[in-house]
Image 1 (cartoon, rainbow over the protein chains, first blue to last red):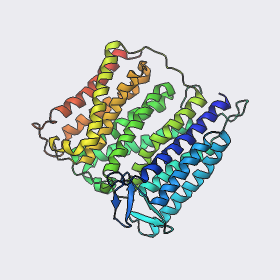
Image 2 (cartoon, each protein chain N blue to C red):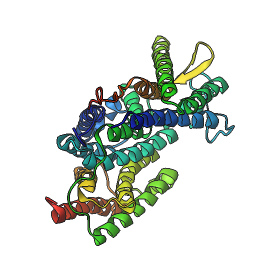
Image 3 (cartoon, rainbow over the protein chains, first blue to last red):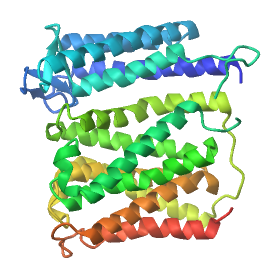
Image 4 (spheres, chains in turn orange, green):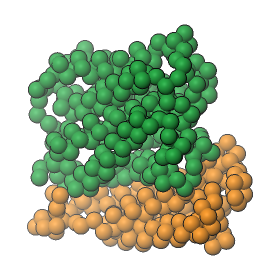
Length: 151
Length: 266
Protein backbone atom coordinates (compact mmCIF):
# COMPACT_ATOMS: atom_id res chain seq x y z
CA UNK A 1 0.00 0.00 0.00
CA UNK A 2 1.51 3.29 -1.08
CA UNK A 3 1.84 6.37 1.04
CA UNK A 4 -0.06 8.25 -1.66
CA UNK A 5 -3.14 6.13 -1.01
CA UNK A 6 -2.88 6.82 2.70
CA UNK A 7 -2.42 10.52 2.02
CA UNK A 8 -5.71 10.62 0.17
CA UNK A 9 -7.40 8.99 3.17
CA UNK A 10 -6.06 11.62 5.59
CA UNK A 11 -7.01 14.42 3.23
CA UNK A 12 -10.46 12.90 2.75
CA UNK A 13 -10.90 12.86 6.53
CA UNK A 14 -10.04 16.54 6.83
CA UNK A 15 -12.38 17.27 3.93
CA UNK A 16 -15.25 15.35 5.50
CA UNK A 17 -14.93 16.86 8.98
CA UNK A 18 -14.43 20.29 7.44
CA UNK A 19 -17.54 19.85 5.29
CA UNK A 20 -19.59 18.80 8.30
CA UNK A 21 -18.52 21.89 10.25
CA UNK A 22 -19.08 24.14 7.25
CA UNK A 23 -22.64 22.84 6.87
CA UNK A 24 -23.25 23.19 10.61
CA UNK A 25 -21.85 26.72 10.57
CA UNK A 26 -24.03 27.74 7.65
CA UNK A 27 -27.12 26.01 9.05
CA UNK A 28 -26.62 27.86 12.33
CA UNK A 29 -27.23 31.17 10.59
CA UNK A 30 -30.61 30.10 9.18
CA UNK A 31 -33.06 32.31 11.07
CA UNK A 32 -35.76 29.67 11.39
CA UNK A 33 -37.35 28.58 14.61
CA UNK A 34 -38.19 25.25 12.96
CA UNK A 35 -34.52 24.49 12.24
CA UNK A 36 -32.75 26.27 15.09
CA UNK A 37 -35.41 26.72 17.77
CA UNK A 38 -34.83 29.05 20.68
CA UNK A 39 -34.44 27.20 23.98
CA UNK A 40 -34.96 28.70 27.41
CA UNK A 41 -33.76 25.90 29.68
CA UNK A 42 -30.90 27.69 31.43
CA UNK A 43 -29.56 30.34 29.09
CA UNK A 44 -31.71 31.63 26.25
CA UNK A 45 -30.06 30.45 23.04
CA UNK A 46 -30.95 28.72 19.77
CA UNK A 47 -30.21 25.03 19.37
CA UNK A 48 -28.74 24.09 16.00
CA UNK A 49 -31.09 21.46 14.52
CA UNK A 50 -32.77 21.43 17.94
CA UNK A 51 -29.64 19.79 19.34
CA UNK A 52 -26.47 21.90 19.72
CA UNK A 53 -26.55 25.18 21.65
CA UNK A 54 -25.18 27.96 19.44
CA UNK A 55 -24.92 31.69 18.90
CA UNK A 56 -23.35 33.80 16.17
CA UNK A 57 -19.82 33.39 17.60
CA UNK A 58 -20.28 29.62 17.86
CA UNK A 59 -21.42 29.55 14.22
CA UNK A 60 -18.39 31.56 13.12
CA UNK A 61 -16.12 29.09 14.92
CA UNK A 62 -17.87 26.19 13.18
CA UNK A 63 -17.41 27.98 9.86
CA UNK A 64 -13.73 28.62 10.61
CA UNK A 65 -13.15 24.93 11.40
CA UNK A 66 -15.00 24.00 8.22
CA UNK A 67 -13.17 26.38 5.90
CA UNK A 68 -9.74 25.55 7.34
CA UNK A 69 -10.53 21.83 7.08
CA UNK A 70 -11.46 22.17 3.43
CA UNK A 71 -8.31 24.17 2.72
CA UNK A 72 -6.10 21.79 4.71
CA UNK A 73 -7.46 18.81 2.80
CA UNK A 74 -5.57 19.98 -0.27
CA UNK A 75 -2.21 18.74 1.04
CA UNK A 76 -1.23 15.87 3.30
CA UNK A 77 1.02 17.96 5.58
CA UNK A 78 -1.66 20.59 6.00
CA UNK A 79 -4.33 17.98 6.67
CA UNK A 80 -2.22 16.37 9.40
CA UNK A 81 -1.36 19.70 11.03
CA UNK A 82 -5.01 20.72 10.89
CA UNK A 83 -5.96 17.40 12.42
CA UNK A 84 -3.61 17.89 15.38
CA UNK A 85 -4.51 21.52 16.02
CA UNK A 86 -8.27 21.09 15.54
CA UNK A 87 -8.28 17.86 17.48
CA UNK A 88 -6.47 19.32 20.46
CA UNK A 89 -8.62 22.48 20.49
CA UNK A 90 -11.89 20.54 20.26
CA UNK A 91 -10.87 18.01 22.91
CA UNK A 92 -9.76 20.78 25.26
CA UNK A 93 -13.06 22.55 24.66
CA UNK A 94 -14.87 19.30 25.43
CA UNK A 95 -12.95 18.86 28.69
CA UNK A 96 -13.31 22.48 29.75
CA UNK A 97 -16.99 22.50 28.87
CA UNK A 98 -17.66 19.34 30.85
CA UNK A 99 -15.76 20.67 33.86
CA UNK A 100 -17.72 23.92 33.76
CA UNK A 101 -20.98 22.02 33.39
CA UNK A 102 -20.08 19.86 36.39
CA UNK A 103 -19.17 22.91 38.47
CA UNK A 104 -22.48 24.56 37.56
CA UNK A 105 -24.49 21.47 38.52
CA UNK A 106 -24.98 20.05 35.01
CA UNK A 107 -27.49 22.57 33.64
CA UNK A 108 -29.16 21.79 30.29
CA UNK A 109 -26.94 24.43 28.68
CA UNK A 110 -24.22 26.84 29.72
CA UNK A 111 -22.28 29.92 28.58
CA UNK A 112 -18.60 28.98 28.29
CA UNK A 113 -16.30 31.89 29.28
CA UNK A 114 -19.41 34.03 29.20
CA UNK A 115 -19.60 34.00 25.40
CA UNK A 116 -19.96 30.50 23.95
CA UNK A 117 -23.18 28.51 24.51
CA UNK A 118 -22.58 24.81 25.06
CA UNK A 119 -24.68 21.79 25.96
CA UNK A 120 -24.19 18.04 26.07
CA UNK A 121 -24.84 17.40 22.34
CA UNK A 122 -22.28 20.13 21.66
CA UNK A 123 -19.77 18.61 24.08
CA UNK A 124 -20.09 15.22 22.42
CA UNK A 125 -19.84 16.76 18.95
CA UNK A 126 -16.56 18.32 20.05
CA UNK A 127 -15.40 15.03 21.58
CA UNK A 128 -16.16 12.86 18.56
CA UNK A 129 -14.95 15.20 15.84
CA UNK A 130 -11.95 16.25 17.95
CA UNK A 131 -10.91 12.63 18.44
CA UNK A 132 -11.33 11.94 14.73
CA UNK A 133 -9.34 15.02 13.74
CA UNK A 134 -6.55 14.11 16.16
CA UNK A 135 -6.57 10.56 14.78
CA UNK A 136 -6.05 11.98 11.28
CA UNK A 137 -3.17 14.04 12.54
CA UNK A 138 -1.44 11.27 14.45
CA UNK A 139 -2.25 8.01 12.64
CA UNK A 140 0.99 6.36 11.60
CA UNK A 141 1.71 6.55 7.91
CA UNK A 142 3.61 3.76 6.18
CA UNK A 143 7.14 4.55 5.10
CA UNK A 144 8.05 3.82 1.48
CA UNK A 145 9.41 0.38 2.54
CA UNK A 146 6.12 -0.45 4.27
CA UNK A 147 7.31 -0.02 7.86
CA UNK A 148 4.71 1.51 10.13
CA UNK A 149 1.95 -0.03 8.11
CA UNK A 150 0.42 -1.90 10.99
CA UNK A 151 -3.00 -3.44 11.35
CA UNK B 1 -3.32 -9.37 7.41
CA UNK B 2 -4.81 -8.97 3.95
CA UNK B 3 -8.52 -8.07 4.24
CA UNK B 4 -8.50 -8.47 8.04
CA UNK B 5 -10.22 -5.77 10.06
CA UNK B 6 -7.94 -2.95 11.15
CA UNK B 7 -7.32 -2.60 14.85
CA UNK B 8 -9.48 0.55 14.99
CA UNK B 9 -12.54 -1.32 13.72
CA UNK B 10 -11.83 -4.30 15.96
CA UNK B 11 -11.76 -2.11 19.05
CA UNK B 12 -14.88 -0.20 18.01
CA UNK B 13 -16.71 -3.44 17.35
CA UNK B 14 -15.70 -4.93 20.69
CA UNK B 15 -16.97 -1.83 22.50
CA UNK B 16 -20.17 -1.76 20.41
CA UNK B 17 -20.71 -5.45 21.06
CA UNK B 18 -20.49 -4.93 24.82
CA UNK B 19 -22.81 -1.92 24.70
CA UNK B 20 -25.35 -3.73 22.51
CA UNK B 21 -25.39 -6.80 24.75
CA UNK B 22 -25.77 -4.63 27.85
CA UNK B 23 -28.68 -2.59 26.51
CA UNK B 24 -30.31 -5.53 24.76
CA UNK B 25 -30.42 -7.39 28.08
CA UNK B 26 -31.47 -4.32 30.07
CA UNK B 27 -34.31 -3.35 27.74
CA UNK B 28 -35.68 -6.89 27.60
CA UNK B 29 -35.13 -7.90 31.23
CA UNK B 30 -35.72 -4.58 32.97
CA UNK B 31 -38.02 -2.64 30.64
CA UNK B 32 -39.70 -1.01 33.62
CA UNK B 33 -36.46 0.46 34.94
CA UNK B 34 -35.57 2.54 31.88
CA UNK B 35 -35.99 5.63 34.04
CA UNK B 36 -32.84 4.49 35.87
CA UNK B 37 -30.54 3.59 32.96
CA UNK B 38 -32.09 5.06 29.81
CA UNK B 39 -31.24 8.30 27.99
CA UNK B 40 -34.95 9.03 28.08
CA UNK B 41 -37.89 7.42 29.85
CA UNK B 42 -39.60 4.85 27.62
CA UNK B 43 -43.20 4.78 28.84
CA UNK B 44 -43.98 1.05 28.62
CA UNK B 45 -42.44 -2.39 28.14
CA UNK B 46 -43.80 -2.81 24.59
CA UNK B 47 -41.89 0.26 23.46
CA UNK B 48 -38.77 -0.81 25.36
CA UNK B 49 -38.79 -4.13 23.49
CA UNK B 50 -39.36 -2.27 20.21
CA UNK B 51 -36.26 -0.15 20.78
CA UNK B 52 -34.27 -2.95 22.47
CA UNK B 53 -34.62 -5.43 19.60
CA UNK B 54 -31.91 -3.56 17.69
CA UNK B 55 -29.51 -4.13 20.60
CA UNK B 56 -30.43 -7.81 20.76
CA UNK B 57 -29.73 -8.23 17.06
CA UNK B 58 -26.59 -6.11 16.78
CA UNK B 59 -24.30 -8.48 18.74
CA UNK B 60 -24.84 -11.08 16.00
CA UNK B 61 -23.27 -8.73 13.48
CA UNK B 62 -20.46 -7.53 15.74
CA UNK B 63 -19.53 -10.99 17.01
CA UNK B 64 -19.57 -12.52 13.54
CA UNK B 65 -17.55 -9.64 12.09
CA UNK B 66 -14.95 -10.02 14.84
CA UNK B 67 -14.85 -13.82 14.54
CA UNK B 68 -14.55 -13.84 10.76
CA UNK B 69 -12.16 -10.86 10.85
CA UNK B 70 -12.80 -10.19 7.18
CA UNK B 71 -13.44 -6.74 5.75
CA UNK B 72 -15.27 -8.02 2.64
CA UNK B 73 -17.75 -9.80 4.91
CA UNK B 74 -18.12 -6.97 7.45
CA UNK B 75 -17.95 -4.08 4.95
CA UNK B 76 -21.62 -3.74 4.01
CA UNK B 77 -22.63 -3.67 7.65
CA UNK B 78 -20.75 -0.40 8.05
CA UNK B 79 -23.20 1.30 5.69
CA UNK B 80 -26.10 -0.14 7.67
CA UNK B 81 -24.64 1.26 10.88
CA UNK B 82 -24.25 4.68 9.27
CA UNK B 83 -27.88 4.80 8.14
CA UNK B 84 -29.09 3.42 11.47
CA UNK B 85 -27.12 6.16 13.24
CA UNK B 86 -28.45 8.88 10.94
CA UNK B 87 -32.01 7.78 11.63
CA UNK B 88 -31.40 7.84 15.37
CA UNK B 89 -29.72 11.25 15.12
CA UNK B 90 -32.79 12.58 13.32
CA UNK B 91 -34.97 11.09 16.06
CA UNK B 92 -32.76 12.76 18.68
CA UNK B 93 -33.02 16.11 16.90
CA UNK B 94 -36.81 15.93 16.85
CA UNK B 95 -37.05 14.99 20.52
CA UNK B 96 -34.02 16.34 22.38
CA UNK B 97 -36.42 17.70 24.99
CA UNK B 98 -37.21 14.10 25.99
CA UNK B 99 -33.54 13.28 26.71
CA UNK B 100 -31.89 13.70 30.09
CA UNK B 101 -28.87 15.88 29.19
CA UNK B 102 -26.05 14.56 31.39
CA UNK B 103 -27.19 11.03 32.16
CA UNK B 104 -24.17 8.87 31.15
CA UNK B 105 -26.28 6.86 28.72
CA UNK B 106 -27.37 10.07 26.97
CA UNK B 107 -23.72 10.99 26.44
CA UNK B 108 -23.04 7.43 25.27
CA UNK B 109 -26.06 7.61 22.94
CA UNK B 110 -24.68 10.79 21.37
CA UNK B 111 -21.21 9.29 20.92
CA UNK B 112 -22.65 6.11 19.40
CA UNK B 113 -24.71 7.97 16.82
CA UNK B 114 -22.43 10.92 16.03
CA UNK B 115 -19.47 8.67 15.31
CA UNK B 116 -20.60 6.41 12.44
CA UNK B 117 -21.74 9.10 9.96
CA UNK B 118 -18.40 10.94 10.18
CA UNK B 119 -15.98 8.37 11.55
CA UNK B 120 -16.88 5.21 9.65
CA UNK B 121 -16.32 6.66 6.15
CA UNK B 122 -12.85 7.71 7.30
CA UNK B 123 -12.07 4.41 9.00
CA UNK B 124 -13.40 2.47 6.00
CA UNK B 125 -10.89 4.24 3.80
CA UNK B 126 -8.10 3.61 6.30
CA UNK B 127 -9.20 -0.03 6.29
CA UNK B 128 -9.06 -0.29 2.51
CA UNK B 129 -5.79 1.59 2.26
CA UNK B 130 -4.13 -0.56 4.91
CA UNK B 131 -5.54 -4.03 4.35
CA UNK B 132 -7.11 -4.03 0.90
CA UNK B 133 -10.65 -4.24 -0.34
CA UNK B 134 -10.96 -7.60 -2.10
CA UNK B 135 -14.13 -9.51 -2.82
CA UNK B 136 -14.97 -12.52 -0.72
CA UNK B 137 -15.10 -15.87 -2.52
CA UNK B 138 -18.40 -17.63 -3.08
CA UNK B 139 -21.55 -17.35 -5.15
CA UNK B 140 -23.73 -14.40 -6.08
CA UNK B 141 -27.35 -14.35 -5.01
CA UNK B 142 -29.84 -15.31 -7.72
CA UNK B 143 -32.02 -12.91 -9.68
CA UNK B 144 -35.29 -13.62 -7.80
CA UNK B 145 -33.62 -13.01 -4.47
CA UNK B 146 -31.99 -9.89 -5.87
CA UNK B 147 -35.36 -8.46 -6.91
CA UNK B 148 -36.86 -9.42 -3.56
CA UNK B 149 -34.12 -7.68 -1.57
CA UNK B 150 -34.36 -4.56 -3.73
CA UNK B 151 -38.17 -4.46 -3.47
CA UNK B 152 -38.29 -4.87 0.29
CA UNK B 153 -35.36 -2.46 0.69
CA UNK B 154 -37.21 0.17 -1.31
CA UNK B 155 -40.36 -0.35 0.73
CA UNK B 156 -38.50 -0.07 4.05
CA UNK B 157 -36.59 3.00 2.85
CA UNK B 158 -39.86 4.73 2.02
CA UNK B 159 -41.41 3.68 5.33
CA UNK B 160 -38.35 4.82 7.28
CA UNK B 161 -38.39 8.28 5.69
CA UNK B 162 -42.15 8.63 6.18
CA UNK B 163 -41.90 7.37 9.75
CA UNK B 164 -39.09 9.79 10.60
CA UNK B 165 -40.98 12.74 9.13
CA UNK B 166 -44.53 11.93 10.21
CA UNK B 167 -44.18 9.86 13.40
CA UNK B 168 -46.89 11.83 15.27
CA UNK B 169 -49.39 10.88 12.56
CA UNK B 170 -48.53 7.19 12.95
CA UNK B 171 -48.83 7.09 16.74
CA UNK B 172 -52.67 6.79 16.82
CA UNK B 173 -52.48 3.73 14.52
CA UNK B 174 -49.89 1.93 16.67
CA UNK B 175 -51.16 -1.16 18.49
CA UNK B 176 -50.01 0.06 21.89
CA UNK B 177 -49.53 3.51 23.48
CA UNK B 178 -46.29 4.90 22.07
CA UNK B 179 -44.66 8.29 21.62
CA UNK B 180 -43.23 9.70 18.38
CA UNK B 181 -39.68 9.36 19.75
CA UNK B 182 -39.87 5.56 20.01
CA UNK B 183 -41.48 5.40 16.55
CA UNK B 184 -38.65 7.44 15.07
CA UNK B 185 -35.98 5.42 16.86
CA UNK B 186 -37.62 2.26 15.50
CA UNK B 187 -37.23 3.68 11.97
CA UNK B 188 -33.49 3.04 12.35
CA UNK B 189 -34.25 -0.69 12.16
CA UNK B 190 -36.14 -0.12 8.91
CA UNK B 191 -33.18 1.87 7.61
CA UNK B 192 -30.91 -1.16 8.11
CA UNK B 193 -33.31 -3.30 6.08
CA UNK B 194 -33.42 -0.57 3.44
CA UNK B 195 -29.64 -0.54 3.25
CA UNK B 196 -29.69 -4.29 2.59
CA UNK B 197 -31.68 -3.58 -0.57
CA UNK B 198 -29.50 -0.65 -1.54
CA UNK B 199 -26.37 -2.81 -1.48
CA UNK B 200 -27.92 -5.24 -3.94
CA UNK B 201 -29.28 -2.41 -6.07
CA UNK B 202 -25.75 -1.00 -6.23
CA UNK B 203 -24.59 -4.31 -7.68
CA UNK B 204 -22.97 -6.15 -4.77
CA UNK B 205 -24.61 -9.55 -5.21
CA UNK B 206 -22.00 -11.69 -3.43
CA UNK B 207 -23.75 -13.76 -0.76
CA UNK B 208 -20.82 -13.55 1.64
CA UNK B 209 -21.03 -9.75 1.52
CA UNK B 210 -24.73 -9.72 2.36
CA UNK B 211 -25.09 -12.52 4.87
CA UNK B 212 -24.12 -10.63 8.06
CA UNK B 213 -26.62 -7.86 7.34
CA UNK B 214 -29.34 -10.44 6.85
CA UNK B 215 -28.31 -12.24 10.02
CA UNK B 216 -28.64 -8.91 11.84
CA UNK B 217 -32.09 -8.05 10.48
CA UNK B 218 -33.35 -11.61 10.99
CA UNK B 219 -32.25 -11.55 14.62
CA UNK B 220 -33.80 -8.14 15.15
CA UNK B 221 -37.05 -9.49 13.67
CA UNK B 222 -36.92 -12.49 16.01
CA UNK B 223 -36.29 -10.19 18.97
CA UNK B 224 -39.26 -8.06 17.93
CA UNK B 225 -41.48 -11.14 17.82
CA UNK B 226 -40.18 -12.15 21.24
CA UNK B 227 -41.06 -8.67 22.48
CA UNK B 228 -44.60 -9.04 21.17
CA UNK B 229 -44.89 -12.41 22.92
CA UNK B 230 -43.57 -10.98 26.18
CA UNK B 231 -46.25 -8.32 25.95
CA UNK B 232 -46.03 -5.73 28.64
CA UNK B 233 -49.37 -4.09 28.23
CA UNK B 234 -52.47 -4.09 26.04
CA UNK B 235 -52.01 -4.79 22.33
CA UNK B 236 -54.71 -3.60 19.98
CA UNK B 237 -54.89 -6.18 17.19
CA UNK B 238 -57.63 -4.22 15.43
CA UNK B 239 -55.48 -1.10 15.02
CA UNK B 240 -54.14 -0.48 11.49
CA UNK B 241 -50.64 -1.66 12.46
CA UNK B 242 -51.78 -4.43 14.80
CA UNK B 243 -51.34 -7.13 12.17
CA UNK B 244 -48.85 -5.39 9.90
CA UNK B 245 -46.11 -5.05 12.52
CA UNK B 246 -45.93 -8.79 13.37
CA UNK B 247 -46.10 -9.60 9.66
CA UNK B 248 -43.18 -7.28 8.99
CA UNK B 249 -41.11 -8.85 11.76
CA UNK B 250 -41.99 -12.30 10.42
CA UNK B 251 -40.79 -11.21 6.98
CA UNK B 252 -37.43 -10.11 8.45
CA UNK B 253 -37.00 -13.54 10.01
CA UNK B 254 -38.32 -15.49 7.01
CA UNK B 255 -36.12 -13.74 4.46
CA UNK B 256 -33.06 -14.40 6.60
CA UNK B 257 -33.90 -18.04 7.32
CA UNK B 258 -34.78 -18.81 3.71
CA UNK B 259 -31.69 -17.15 2.30
CA UNK B 260 -29.42 -18.85 4.81
CA UNK B 261 -30.99 -22.21 4.01
CA UNK B 262 -30.54 -21.65 0.26
CA UNK B 263 -26.99 -20.29 0.43
CA UNK B 264 -25.60 -22.14 3.44
CA UNK B 265 -21.87 -22.84 3.02
CA UNK B 266 -21.77 -20.94 -0.25
